[in-house]
Amino acid sequence: MSTILPETALILVAILPTPRDFDIARLFGWYRIPLKSAPKIISVDYLAFYQTQSFGGAGRWQIAYVAEILGHELTRRRDLIRDEIDHPRADEEYFKLQIGPLQRLEHPIPAGDWKRITFFYTTGEMFQNAQTINDLVIKSQDEREVLWHTLRERALRAHEYRAQELPESLLDPAILALLGKFSG
Image 1 (tube, rainbow, N blue to C red):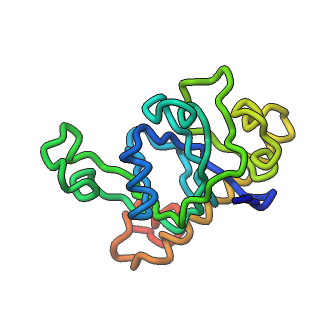
Image 2: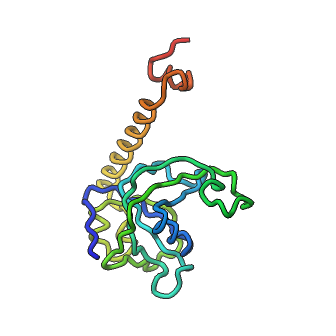
């Protein structure tokens, strides 16, 4: 299947640590990120899934799937993975990202020399032209400025959305003071 992403798409490259995580994404339509290690902004258009060594053979060390982000929420690990309620991190907070169907790339993007990857951002344009994961990395100052401008806009939009959703009586007085809505 040929996957065409918009050139202006904001993409988060995310780690798929195990085939079980792949099955959760494929069957249940969500992906989890621990809050304590989450990137600063998760309001992106797509996730690109980096498959680790645990996928074995030709499936390891590559990006072979992407999925559109449909929304996200904050929850506890125990509420996400109910058969692991005694897990050491069961009470930790996680972002649950709701995703659309996984789209298999016609030409997976191999890691090349990169094997250990953490979360990073890229663009649809870079994704469409990438031959290896190194090609996804923002390198020029101009590209960095465009990326950071886009990330800043996403962060501001996400905060505005949350503020509009909450009644002012539930907002912290310090936040209301910053917004000029509280003087006491």
